[in-house]
Structure formats: C-alpha cells, structure tokens
Amino acid sequence: MDHAYEHPHLSLGVVAFNLSQKQAIIDQLELLRRDNGSTESFFNDQSKEPFFVKNLESVQGDERDVMFISVGYGKGPDGSPTSMNFGALNGDGGERRLNVLISRAKQRCEIFSSLTWEDIDLSRTQARGVSAFKTYLRFAKTGILDNPHSSQREPDSPFELSVASALRELGFKVEHQVGSAGYFIDLAVVHPAKPGQYLLAVECDGASYHSAKSARDRDRLRQYVLEQLGWKFHRVWSTDWFASSEQEIRKLKSAVDRALLMVAEPVERPVVDDIGMDRSVGAATISELSPTLYYAKVNLGNINPLNCLFHDLPLRSLTSAISRVICAEGPIHRDEVYRRVANAAGANRIGNKIAEVLK
Image (tube, rainbow, N blue to C red; front, side, top):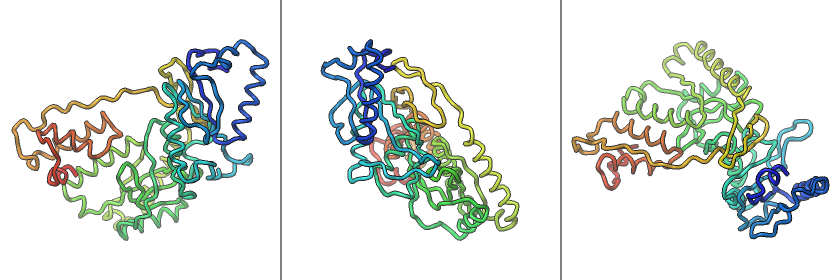
C-alpha cells in the first residue's frame, strides 16, 4: 500500500515462498484496498507490467521495477530453531528458482523475513537452494557476497587438533577447515545461539611455515581479504601453545568472548536507495539490498617500469597490486585479479610460471 501511494509510477510484483503465504498476502491486501480506494488505479492498471502476487514456483519471466519477496518461514512460537525446510528451495533446482526470483527486479528488490542468514544452519541440509538463499540473505543485510561453509577436509596438524580440543573443553563448537572466498580457515568457532554463523577464525601457525617471508606476505593478504568479508581473526603460535598452553587458552577464550560482544548488539544503519525510499536495517529483519554501486576497473598503472622478467618483480609490488585490485573491485575471481596484475606488469597472457608467482 505504501508503494502504491508513494511510487505509483514504478511497477511492483510480490512473491511468496509458498501458496499459503501468497493467499495470506492477497487476503490482507484486499481488506486494505476495501478501506481505501485511492490506490485502485495502481492495482487495477492493466498495462504491460500490472501488479501481481505469486508464489515462488509460478514466477518465470515476470520483470517489474520493484520486487517484494516474502519468506514466510521462521522460528517456532517458542523460539525453537528454524526448520531447514524452505519448500521449493529444498528440491532439485531450488537454486535456479531462487536465481530467477531475485533477478526479476529492474530497479530494486526488497526481502521481508523474520529469519536472518545467521539462522540458517547449512550443517542440517545439503540443499543447494538453501545454501544460495543463505548467501542472498547475507548479501541483502550486509552487502557481503560470501557463504562460509564446512569443507569436510581433515585438520592440517596435531597442533590444530589440540587447539580445537581446548576450544571444545571451553564449551564452544568448532569446525575444521572452513571454506570462505576460496581460502580455508584452520578453525572456525560457531556462534552458540546462531549455528549458521561463525564467530571467529582461529589460525594455528607453525613456526617453520611462517619463517618464510613469502608465506607471511601471502597470509597477510589472505587475512585482509577475509576480514573484508567480516571474519575476525585470532592467531595461535605452536611454540607459544606448547610452551605456555594455559596462558594461550586464556587468550583464546578472551578472543571468543570479544567476538561474542561485537555481534551481541548490531548497529542499525540508515539506507537510502536509488528510488528515494529511506529505511532502517534492523537486527531482526532483512530489509533491502544496498544502494547500487557502479563497477569500475582499478587503474594500476605500470608496475614494471624497468621491464623486468615477471618472476623478478619485487614481491611487495605484486602484493600491493593484488590488494588494490581486491579493494577496488572485490568480490572478484582470482583469475581476474591475476589478469589485472599481469597486464599492469606488461604481460599479455598468463602462463603457468606467472600464475605460480601470483599464487
């Protein structure tokens, strides 16, 4: 109704995740329209893009200026954990249905939900549609396009197992080798009240690995990328762990406690979109996507003024160039980053040797 009052020049479509939610929306809308007839011209407009309310399965080629998505699933009345059953999203091709839905809006997409991405626990479902839905909810709330996931990979070392065991004895749930943005995190501590959210990344650093300068540089870049996606880090050195484990365990617990405090009271932020709507994003509901940001390639200039062979370029120059690309264009595929940096160094194609240097 607000949309019909304030933006009647923009076509609107409403999509619910199931038939019962669709019917509930139609029933309520009919009551509101009966009480106020001033918006009937909007709802009765039979132009090429008339208003509609549909369920997820029936949305195909229907494009509108604005799309409202009603999730309709949530926690139980007693606050019991969310069921990981989201109807059509759980079936084969559920991720394709979601892709069709969220790409129907020409200007703006708003999603209404009592669930947030933290409430969706992917350890309880293998459905690709649900995984994609979690990614989308996170992007709608934070602007971050990433979906950390359990990789089922084995722990890297007995040292990692020892740190994980200490965390579990402190009462925390821990997952090994969690994947995020193409990287793997040694240990990820799970939020005790939100099993779909990771609180802290714990890196178990062996002294022999980190004695190499190139390895340290790679780790700094890796941590920087992951921090931009919202990860908080705590590092444990093997030498310190085995020399004074009690002290390191206290530091570890403090790091988890700090991470818990940081997510306990999310800060609300105002959002002004490109069609003039002004909303607030609260901690309990998903609101709209962030304002549109226009994509622009970073200009690295010439990072090889002396015309050196690629593998002779200073590591600092390459690391700096990679960081600049990621900051300006991220999220961006690794191959695209390699291409930007190689071109700035005068290389027209990326062979195995150049790729190995950039790795």
